[in-house]
Length: 150
Image (cartoon, rainbow, N blue to C red; front, side, top):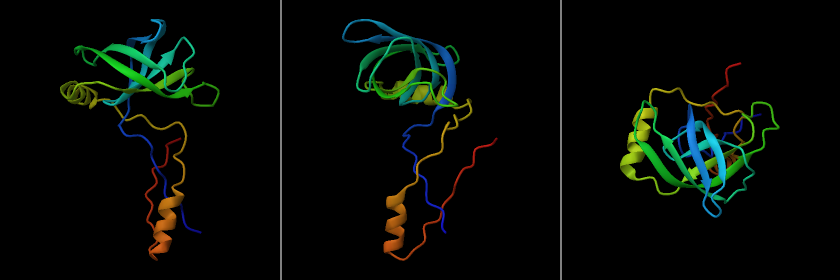
């Protein structure tokens, strides 16, 4: 039996960065959360104090690592972590930045570089389509699986 290739749905490299932020709902001005759990140049994981749903928009303000500039960016909730599974950091939301300027994105990436990579709490799902494409052309797909350290 061959190993199935794994697919990563993450577009950016996340870094653990615990910091303060202001996550404010755009539609009614409620304060949704005040703590960053991890950060990337494309988004963040924010600990939520109020209930949110996928698609909710917010204004997120935070200071870049190493006493960097303060960033104000619109963001949208891409996923909600309920905090019930082992390894979940609690009730939080993964948000994607909507209007972060290119120079701020580069500056954020530079400031996050010294931080270690965030390891996924759960394994990536199998990429069945990639495996089928490999079988169609008669080539076995080689798999490089990164094992989580225990």
